[in-house]
Image 1 (cartoon, helix red, strand yellow):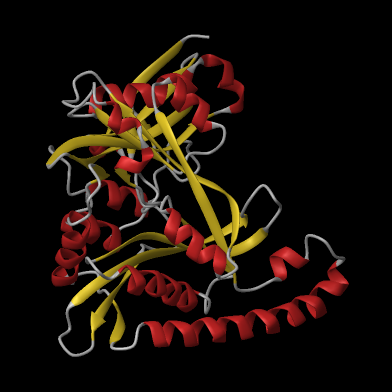
Image 2 (cartoon, helix red, strand yellow; image 1 turned 135 degrees about the vertical axis):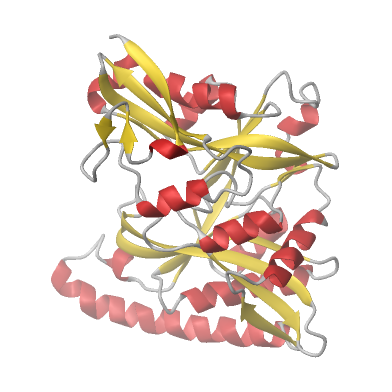
Length: 370
């Protein structure tokens, strides 16, 4: 099978290689994704590469989006890259495009020799490992706010309504208990949603991130927060951020960023038609660890009004133990992959391969936008 890899640029979102790209075309880019890619604050040229298109026997057989991000390492910020939506048609699975597409994007677009891949599917992880990625796996916890999706897995539909109502009453009482605990834990503080254009809050959140003590992290600066709160790859809208302020002084001491998505199939366990809230980013100033964990709970409770469940993935053992004590159940694992190439200044440093040296957040890679 003859293959070819072609770079697609931002100026080519509506047409490509002489073809008009309409909604039924395999290379169609949604309005949301197109605007997000074009608004990336880390673009160094106006007409940057945004996608790698794979052809097999002269037909479109797959694609992979690619865009720049930043990585922080030992006090310096480096140009990095990440990918999104790796896709190869069933008929072309033996073409090798599944390996070639993500490798090509990294090879060309990673400015300083480091790449991030986050929230990869179980099929994509082996592909990325072959391409040199080191994967960090960390626990994913679920707080269930509505029981329908769980109950209907085990009972006939005629019984689901009654039983799920009874279970939901118990969940509602549990939520009220959590809300009371959070109220006392956060006494003297207030929660505020961050407006998409609130640069003061963007800078405060970035300042909290920069105060983190890990050697390595994806560099979430003020521009990153502004980008993620204004743009998205999803039709369900961009992420939202919340800050915790002292009531008297108005000082921002912590933040949480979350998104809300609908899934026809939420997991391999069979949960269907679920509105899922996801805690994507968080941080707190020194000495605010206890406030931070209850602030995360408070945001998760606020999502209960519009979500069936909330997921929270963390590599922080203390935070994980805390939510487990609250009764949140571990359901699988989240993941992030890191590829370090020979031209990266810290290529030979084994510490970069250790998850405990990284500030890990679910919003890494494309996951905050997806």
